[in-house]
Each structure stands twice: as C-alpha cells, then as structure tokens.
Length: 501
Image (cartoon, one colour):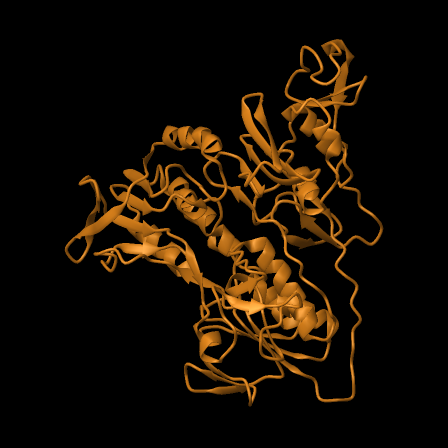
C-alpha cells in the first residue's frame, strides 16, 4: 500500500502543509512553525453495509467491505477510494418471455452495461460479443503490462466464474458484420444470425494510423490490444531501437514502459510540447525534463516523411531530413470510433454514434456507450466516461430511465514515475476565465476558474490533491472564497482540503 505523505496542520487557521517538516511560517495566516502539529487525513469511513468503493481518480469500482490497498487500474492507494452508492434501481420480473440483450464489445463499457442490466432484470438473457479472444481485460493496464509491473494474470476485468455466476454469456472471437434494425437481427462473421430485443453497441475504437509511406512494414505496430502488447514485447529485445510516433499519454507510457529494456527509445511529437491535450506549454516543461532524464529521446515539433527500410522498418525519416534509426516503430497517433457497422445500419453517426442523454441512438431499442459514442458533440475516448456510459446505457435498455449529462475529461500519467493529473478546461478561452498557477515545494500547479467555479486544473509532481480537485470540478462547487483571497496556489490547496468528499 502506498505511504501517505507527512502533513502538518496550522492550529491557528487550519492550513495543511505537506512535507517531512512543518513550514517556517503558515502561508495563509503567518503563524510560526511552532504552531503546527502533525496531521493525518482521516481514512475512508466504512459505513454499515458498505460493499463497493469507487476510485476517485479513475472511477474504478471495487467490491468489498473495505477498499483495495491499491487500485488495479491507476495504482491509487486506499485513501483515494470513497464509498460507492450505485443508483437504486427497481428490479422487474414478469411472466412474459425474458428479453434478450446483446452487447457488442467486451471493454469496460460493455461489461458495465451487462452489470446494470442484470441488476435491473434478473431473468434477462445477456450475450456479450467480443472480437478478441479470451476474457475481457483492463486495456488501461497494457502499458503496465509492458513495463513488467503486472503479469498477464492481472489483466482480466473479472475471472470466468464471475460471468457464470451472473448468467452472462461471453462469446469471444466473435465479430458483428451487419445489423438488421427492422428485424432486430445481427449477422456475425461466421454467417450466424442472432436476434435481439435490445442492442447495446460498445465496439470501442481502433488506432488511427496516418498515411505515412512504409507504415505497413513488418515491425511497425500499434498498442491497442493484448495481442499488440505481446507482439511489442517479442520485438523489444535488449539491442532494439524503438521509435514511438506520438507524444500523447499512450505514447509516453509506452516509452516509459520500454526504456531500460531496449537500447534506445525515441518519441516523435508533431506539436511543440508533450501532451498538448492535457498540458499547457508551461506545464509541459517539467514533464519533458523528467522524460529526458529517463533516457528517452524527444523530438518535438517534427513531421514524419517516411518509415524507411525493406520488409522491415530500419528508420523514420523526418521532413527536415533527419533519420531516426528504428528496429521497432510504434504508432501512437490517436484512435477513431469503430462506427462502420452503425453507419451500414443507418444509425446517425458523426465522429461517433450519436446518442441522447439516455444513450439511445437514432434507432429505437439500440443504445451505444464508450469510445464509439458521441454525446453532445463529445467523443470521450476515456476509461471513466466509458464505464459510466456503459452503466447508464444498460439501465436505460433494461427499462430504468437514467440520464448521462456529461463529465469533465480527466487524465493521469502512470509508468513514467512522474505524477500528472489533468482535468477539464486547462486553457482559458477568453477573459472570463481566471488562472491561479505556481509551484509548491517545487511542484507546478494550475487551476482554472470561471463564474466562481473551478473548471480545470493541472497538477504535476504532487497529485495528492487530485481527488479533491476532481470532486470540486465535477460537483461544481462554489469557489468564490478562493477568488476573493490572495490568488495563491496555497490558498487553493487550503480550500480543497476543507471541502467534504
């Protein structure tokens, strides 16, 4: 279990300072260090009957009377879990023939949908179609698997008996080809037909590979599935030179997982800084310094002209003429929704399958959730929203009306040994936004406010307040007290820890 950092509380004003020693003086009221005393943040309360816990950082839900010591998805310690109260739903059972729910996709959205359906409808027939072989697994943990932090046995979402106990049928290596919306019938790749009463599309997304000459060479790959990860591990020999095209979250995590295992790791990024969707250019400076300190070579603001070689890639040629040698090239240039089946079926599709607040598509009795979904113009492509959407889609499909009203985007960085948390709107669009930024104990923090509410934040190096930040943003708490104060990051921290979870 991760060790909580030491903390000290000012006995005058209640400011909490994190560090091995109390500060020389309180940053809020000026009290001397002799007026500080050791402080231990209370652990999560365990009310009677508590049986589920939600990770405040990644939204993973764990069963049990106590939270897990470490979140299996993001590695957060037990004190970053809260008691989870799922919405109470009314079960129904009738003398009519049980409905058949077919869920296409066995990622977190599909599995969450199945869980919700079973809670509402104990007699329903639930079938999950999975294009991949084997049990559904934590896709988020593939980079930790690459790094050797976890073994293959820790990848599955649930053991096989979990599905058997809930009478949920998993059909691996099964691909959907067409949907007949009039007859409510699916045609599978092996020409089998399957009928449904309610259909939930949760097919996820696929890696976007730009049209770069040479991208089809043998040792050019992507990282999206367990099979991709095993392929990379087979090619990542000690002498290998690895080039990762794309400096986003997945690209950086893959680089962090492989550095030290291979001879050389280089990351090529088209923007002027890393993680342009999660960090401002100012915030990216310290991350880039850390990445370089690990031995990862960075090539910011470059354009790839060609992946050169014969049957195999031998290097990546840049537009400026530089050649980066490569024995393995990993394309990490984003994802696109798997929407082709929905398009063929005549559903409304823009970037993703368009859904309303009940996650219904444009065709009755068909719902969609996860990476394949577009809600109010947003395609999230993130674990937390996919899990949330899956649960809500399942409830609605089973007859328990529930709305999805959107959530702020949030991201964490793992594997690199550098703590990063980002949420919401990090870049002010106009003068109606206000930014409070600075460093505390050498760690950069930035908080963005609008209309007395925190709408975004970046925490680098020290993410101990990330759960408080997430609650503040998601629950739209009134932050006018901060904006009327001294506009320091210390005052923001004091406000955050004073708020109830």
